Image (cartoon, rainbow, N blue to C red):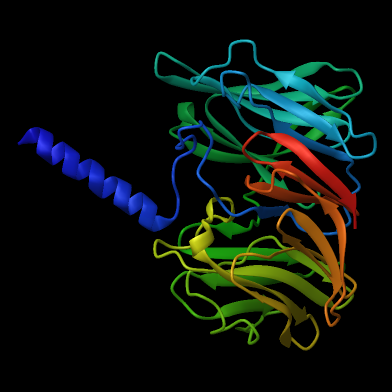
Length: 365
């Protein structure tokens, strides 16, 4: 009887996971994750001045949290810049953030059920590593427009949360405590994006799971983004696929169906993607409109600039004028059956294989 209950419970869990559209990594017999839709990690072309792309490296044993590699978009060099000698499930790199000169790494080590976290700085010029801080608890890196903010949940202070900026003093970095920062939010129930404008003001876009409307807030005025409201599946959200072009905010979103809230963009199965759209929001008039719309999951919007949309379809990145018919292939990838991420660094689109953890292509926008 107990064995039958166990079997039934396992079956229920498998059914729920498959129904949700998300599965665990390494679920296939070949050791690779189940098929997910490729996704945009950094939207663009953008104003990034960074030429370095950092990524995990898959070891021969399949472990991916022991090494960080740096890819230079100018030279196409790709090499390991930081690694752990004692890596395993308990000792691993849990987060990282870098630019051309500096790389910041969070390392977590568990010993006797005590979790300790370390914040490292790697200097790309000297090749030296510095431990900025180590604590009993957790360290998180919050991505901001101008860099990162460090969040520390300290076990020795009953999980009290502190926020810090990183300041350089001569050749080393120190933490300077600040108040809780304004931040974008994405969880199962809602998504929020804060768009900073040049005049210091902000536009806030919000979408709640289970609701049909998208909302905006600017200068104390709130309303619906009319072009999007009621035109999407209820489980869709707003991600950081946003650019400011003059007095317009241009954004891309996906119409998704996932009955357990807003599906993470990197865990979207083909059956959950119903379409996507490029939209425009006027900062002055608060009016909105759809610029380009796609039905189904065969084509994805991966970028936009000055009236041209960038698409990914069947292993090819395509550039086309929004109102035109002509399509121009600007680059191709061979392993298009894998899940890929699209990462814009200024005018360069870098394509990363999220299953083999290697850069598979790049092209200029």
